[in-house]
Every structure is written in structure tokens, then in C-alpha cells.
Image (cartoon, rainbow, N blue to C red; front, side):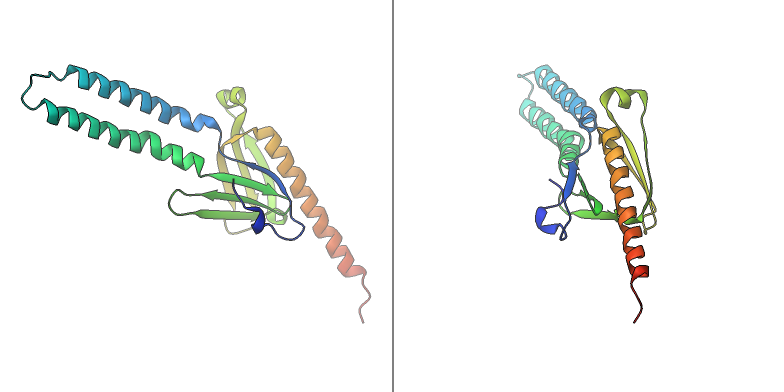
Length: 179
């Protein structure tokens, strides 16, 4: 899931890989159940002695399949194909069903990491992770991150470690004698 190991740089380690919280699937699941129930009732209600009963039943099934695809299957595929990977060097966000989009935020460019949770999100253990960086994207707000407090703490620790490594490298450059 997420960033394949072959795409990791030398010395880079995967710290955590995850996808959005399962609560993203509650709405599509409810839609799936309601569409199935509605189409079942519609198929039951259409009288079998009706002259065009076959067309009516086929129409109900076709409509149900279209609605299930749009409101249940596509959101599931989007959830399944969204991945977050936190490594010792970067944070990667990959998403896409047919096409793939990947955004990367180098940890040494991250300014702040914060999180927010509603009451329901606190009960479910998820929330919104906000990452502000000095890069082009500036501010990323990632919703429905599972185990948000653990992710934020680990993210913050890695950002601090990346900052310490940059300071050590800068000190090393200034300590060298100039020929």
C-alpha cells in the first residue's frame, strides 16, 4: 500500500503506511443498502401481469446498478486507492482509481503539523491532519486520518529529526576548514 519499497531513497525507511479511516465508507454503505432495498421493493411492486413488466424490471435493475456504481462502488474504490506513507524523509499522498496522483512533502520543508477532531471523530479515533510546508502546496488538510494522535506525534517527531539533521549538516559545512 502506498509508496513501494523500490521508490525509497538510500537510507530512507518506511515509518507508517495507512489509508483514510473506514468512516468514509459509512455513507456509501448506507447508499448501497437503501438502493438495494428500494430496487427490491420496486421489483416486488411491479405486477407480473403488467404488459411491460419485463421492461420495468430491467429498468429498475439497470437504474439500481448505475446508482450503486456512482454512490457506493466509486467511493469505495477511491478510499481503497488512497494511501498515505510517512517515511524518515518525506510524507507521500497517493490517490486515484484509473489515473494515479502522488504528492510528496519533504519533512525538512514542513513548518507545522496540527490536528483537529470533532466529537464523533474523537470517539472513532480519526481526524484532520494539517501540514504546513514551505513548498508549493503550502498547506495540506487531510481529512479522516486514522489514529490521528499517533500519526501527528510520529509526524512531528520525524519533522524534528529532519530539522536536527539539517542543522547538523549546516554545522558540518561551517566547521570544515576552507582551503
